[in-house]
Image (cartoon, rainbow, N blue to C red; front, side, top):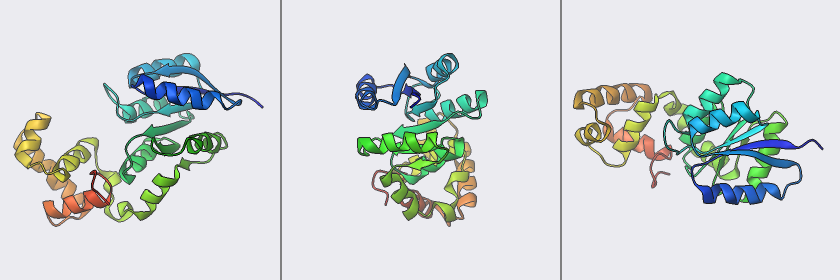
Length: 212
């Protein structure tokens, strides 16, 4: 059996070590490189041309989604599986929309990651069981949250966490008018009647810790 070469991208050394030990127990898998940022991931991908990239989302710098897009811009056939602590369906949908072929939450059993690698190598897409359930239960298809830009999604998340428009503006270093313009766009895209409706949709999509 030919060895599957893996690039592992995560900014936490302990997490990388844990996955390294898991993957080393699989005779057909070999971690050929590690990276702790999106920029380092792109450089490592160019150097090692791995069969699979395991990509975290929350990292310093541009972050995982930007790294997914950058790697695919270099090689449209790259096989990327996002492995993230984020469990809301929107994160899985955003990752897949960016071109990732799989999404596994870090709370999944170890065998889910091994299974996802096998599925992606065989040309299929892969979601860990918990993420598949999240996607099935959410109203993302109707609400079209996945159509939001990164900035709009960020503003919606902050609104759903209880921040006012003025506080969001201060937090992001933008003007209050810019925030209101973005919120107007979000309301239009999600067909929301107001901010309270936006918060409800965000919670249903899993954008907040208490979201269902």
